[in-house]
Image (cartoon, rainbow, N blue to C red; front, top):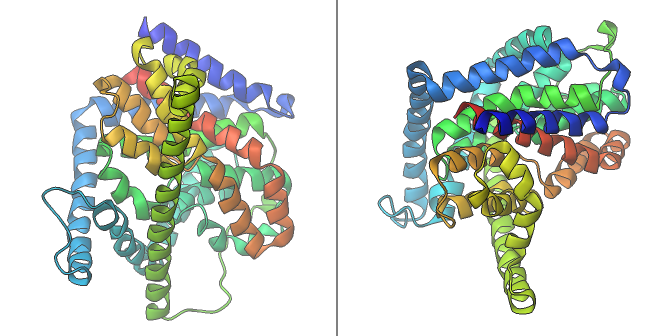
Length: 394
């Protein structure tokens, strides 16, 4: 029965993307079919095989190793306040290690190791997805640099992009997550779900964009070269990335304080007036989608509530509810909801992406604001697609 529901859910997701496509006749179905098959194969590899367990275990141990060194820096500054046993201080244990991970990304970028990796993977992806090399590079870069920083790496190409190509770049940025905060996610979710979501979202972003936003790329306009205004020294790059990481940590912390407090207030008001919390009300709206992703109907309303919380606030707020086991989900529901949460698809990201682009190119930033809701719609479908595939595989 779960396979029938999952297949229906998959069809619904693709149909919802198709309904919002402006040029349905230009959709390339062969690359979409290939990427769907790759998603199923990769999900099965990562979740259901011993090799997948080894890969995810190695990835998780690598981040655990790095987070141990991050704790040294945090503990030095905060003089023993870091509680390794209880893990109770969210800001110290989860957010501040982002500073160290961001610094490492800066070092790898200065040494041009990241550029080689991103360019190589991007080139291979372009052979599969039927899109340009720039779109493929940007998708990989988004998963490493983050949804704001990635546009700096392609700022010279922004002025050359039409609306369709810009949409795809923005969709990739919103559908993925930054490597600098993956360690933070792994303190709240199981590493296997985080890694699986990152991999599947990469292809899912191309699939949904190919349906909603189909187009042809002129090879002469597919410029991949990344330029800088001036060559920065090692310590300039290191200092820049350390401060970027600190800004991200502070920003996420501030957003969590505000959103969690507001959600608590709204829940209290709704409970007093209507006898039901605001989150539960959202849960009813999202429950059919949760059910089609593979969540049992008995858990669909609460799962829908967590999913909706991510959409209206951000993924950290929703992960906090999930990590605290607020609703006592089954293992399968936890897997499905977890992978759904691993992306930047929320309302706040519209402003973040548009603002980042506008700072580099005002015209293109205004254009990104124009298709902001359509962008969020597509990125949310990517999360639904990933979660539905995991529901079929798990």
